[in-house]
Length: 112
Image (cartoon, rainbow, N blue to C red; front, side):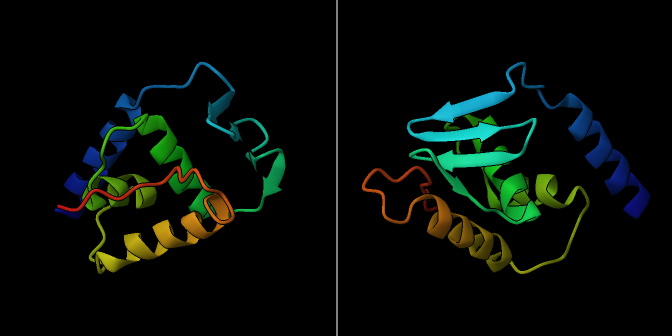
């Protein structure tokens, strides 16, 4: 069962669209995929590896709503039995770094 889950995760990873640009911009947020540098208002934002990975997952969704399960599948690349609050915690970490001190919030939660 675990082998099947891992194979499916690898197949999903292969099917992901590849970014042709090395720099992605949303409003005043810039993500450089080559250097893994993130800036907002031209100020560098230090992110942990998981926070950076989560941000790229959200950026690649291009405004599409992602479920916690979709995020968990991409963030950990294998099936994990974790509390759904784990995703919320990482989102909150990211919000504190990306959206703090900014009137225009970039990370939104859709209930349900």
